Image (cartoon, rainbow, N blue to C red; front, top):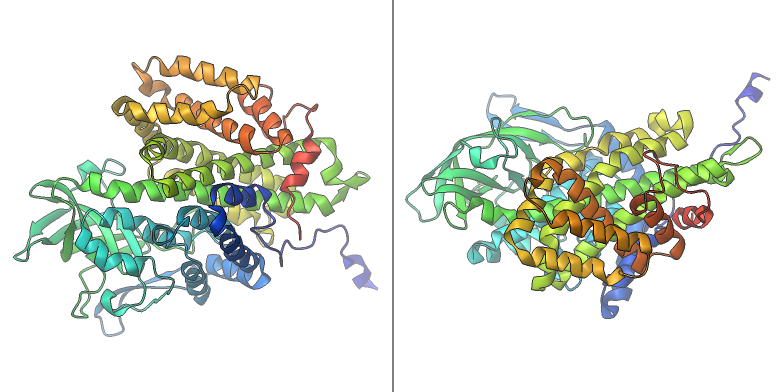
Length: 544
């Protein structure tokens, strides 16, 4: 008799056994828009396969297991020998292997590779974001290594491989490798020119011995790392292999793993170099110039990762509200909840649309597109990653108390949501990089204005926002104190122009009204009630 009190009613079914890619209309339309027609069938097929895997109950369980069983550091073996190894749960290796096999490190090696990979990264980030770190750094290492053609020829085929090999052995014996990065130090943080790690030249040309430390080094079990150190000629980029060619281990002392708010499946560490062998990448004194290509690519991945987290949060919220009943009807049909869901959906779609546009610019590779990337990547990184945390919190609230319970998956999204805003340069760094690009290269502003100008005349609120932005850009004297405001407007105008050109009218209208026209409040759920919000919510609803 007591069991009758535990009858479960009015609960949404799990959002599982569905295609994460095809259920995302904004993402699929972006791929169809930016991918060459000759590649479209193949691209959509592979992304749908990844989408089905990502939405499967089994792969979702791997994500939970990887998060609940964080990595463990083993500095010594049972006999006291220094080994500096990190043990991961088997689910971590399954996820990482799936990401590699899906081509998430291989954008540079195939036509349309950046758009295809970007869409895949958005999809895969919705399963478990931690393994995205080594996938991102491996992908992003390619442009830095190309500063040395010989190194690139040796390492690039391994980096872009679709084979995951977790064994610690010489890279030339492996079918595929992963890369990490070590830039920041205790005393410097983002000010990498303050680095104190020293590089002493060895007898063999291009080889050095490193001594120093790195305050943040993620994925320390990677096969090699790009690091910055002070050579006789100044700050320089180096390749540090984990295992040397003769099979001996390089000196790579993992001092501890960071105890982080989120991203717990991924090992972020502090490492010491003490006579560590390294190979120079690029010229001495050109370390920042050499590694900046890697930084730019990982920054775009921060945008993609945040777009993925936002999409999953919105999908969960809309899915829940489509089934949950309260006060005589479905939550999704209640005007106030519909307003909240629509507002969240706008933010998610704007993030996805912008991220895929930037990926397409990488594939294009023209001078104009490269100029656009120099301003749009840091602007997008600044704005999209900052919008992720409040969106995730609001989406969790849509589930009520259920969203505060770990089993819902929403707390994991909330914990992960601030990460991309901090990594690869926090907000102020991005804002200053935008100012630097504007002041140094006139092509940057020309490319930006050419992009947003394609939507001129389509919406009066967008036109007004572009005009106001031009007024602000006309005087950059003393702009540092207002850099955040300026970069926010740059990002919003760019998002608005893309949505006006590509999104359904209901989405573009709502975005321009709330984000550019001032007809929206500071919190989510404050859109004008006269808009067609039901259409916006229905577009964001995942089809299961």
